[in-house]
Length: 74
Length: 444
Image 1 (cartoon, rainbow over the protein chains, first blue to last red):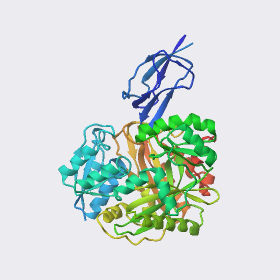
Image 2: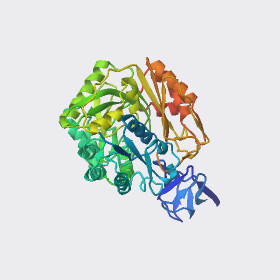
Image 3: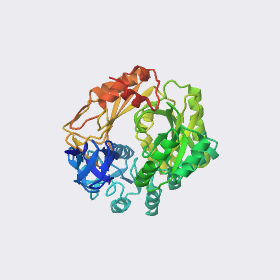
Image 4: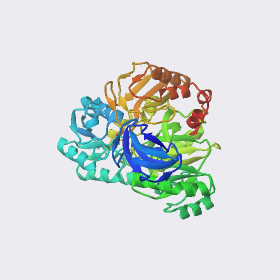
């Protein structure tokens, strides 16, 4: 088991969250979609694993490098 | 003529409209969000009114708040700029209902051209060339049936769309099945309308658009073309006029047909009829933008016309100006606050933001040094417009302008722009809408 922090690449806002805590995800699955400068920025899973924590909520403003979610890889 | 105009926008276009108002001797009213409270356009306007909040929805997309400023300021006209509410028919109607003029075409054109399927039908009925496409599609089964008739590859687009949002190329049933739901959800989120349509897809087409001007008495003329083939994610990056390497008689014939079509429909004020030109030289209607374009400065440089001033004059009932012949060549490069390779938006405070005055180079920007570039609005930082007697000279001047532009605090696409402007194929005028993507996939 290894924990992976998923960070935001941009300053923006959480537009959609596509997963829930406990969900199994594959590498490349879209975890959430951020919105910044009228662009939708998908946040993809860096590894296969499960969602341990979701650290943001819908509409929340996020900073660059802010941790959005924590994954546990199996 | 109007005595006071509310400029319902921000940034470079707000500044541009305020300048046109000053030159016409018209008072201007600016509006600003909290994030824009130090933007340079506020000082240039005759007066400025604060909007509460930062997001577009709270501020520049907030029709009720803008109408309140319209009444409070006693402005007798509203200029919507581009983006935000510029093509919102309901907003335009409420401006007119409040007793002010809406500086744009009759709101019915905002509604008609905003529905992309209806717009295609209008054009086809008026005998303007339209590439094969479908009726509105509500689900994937309808889409698959339409695709079977049209044949792949196809472009899937939102019917209420614009700005490239929710558009994707589909090459077979599998891609259409996979992409339809996602594209439809994006369309729903962005435009509150889930209808999609399919249109013939062309390999390496050119984007050629025609600037139109119409008065309120039924006359429409064209002000030549712009080639806007250099795009990323279906958004324009470099625009030029005239279109390089095309036969003048060919382009002029389409331009005249565009003006004739708009006149036969009864279109008024400014508009841009966008087309795709495929590699066989066939043109097809893409969409009509019922507002001033971001890239209007390119046409101004090659004609000497002030399109924003003409737009205001036409809205006040003036007749059409005399349209000058094309003079020289002009090219615009858009500086975006983004990573030049990934296109990922870049926000921050502009620690350095300087550009010298150079011969034949016009800079349009809504920003100044020390101002923050925020995630709330689009990433356009500045437009660098170069004019030259020849295309080579215009390109050279834009290059000089870009190299002299100092920006620190956010990442910009300047390295990508300069790479394009020295590229052999670009210099030959061999442009197409996939050019930038192909360039990015090549090693530097």
